Length: 185
Image (cartoon, rainbow, N blue to C red):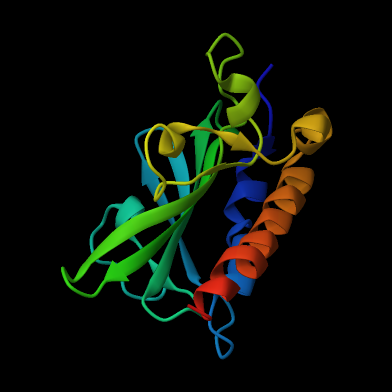
């Protein structure tokens, strides 16, 4: 059975919840990123941005964080199961920094969740719940899936509400333990 299922109406109304979930990462005078629904093949995407979308590809959308020259990207990909039922395929948050010398962005940290990763996949136990990728580290660390909630995985994956709570907790942790520290470098 696929985990994290919802009706189309529930998913379509989720954008505001996503905005609130990401609000801790945004500048003090901001109320969180803008969000936008997008249909791609048989999937419903909730993508976030700061009002400016560089391309039509939701993976390229960014929003400002409260740390100068540091940006984030978040999207949820919901796959269509029937006319009115979807399941969460992935929820991905990526953090980027602008390299002043090259004037290009560099992804350095990701918070991912792949709740419907097939059980027979090698790293499924680590990928299903919220997990980190430390992209800025040396190989092989960037490809490691560092789980945040393995002990409570079944509870966390029982509904979109419990998964959202786990993601929100991880977002606050990233704010306090990573982004706040970037301000002091």
